[in-house]
Length: 88
Image (cartoon, rainbow, N blue to C red; front, side):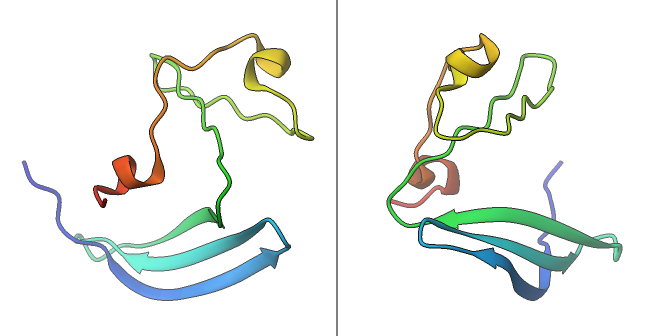
């Protein structure tokens, strides 16, 4: 089964500071249903989004702390933005 393309309808900046920009895109799914996609854009920094084996996301309200320090979890794999987006 192939996934159809999402049609981007709009992009808005919800919050911006010197380190990152929090954005919200609205889009239309191939089924015609509308949706929102929230994400953070950074210039030269990294973010960790822990995903457990059962699909659970571990979210931490952090102030510059390590994932293991805050949650007891550690990363099995780390992907760069280029790897996850398929670009070089």
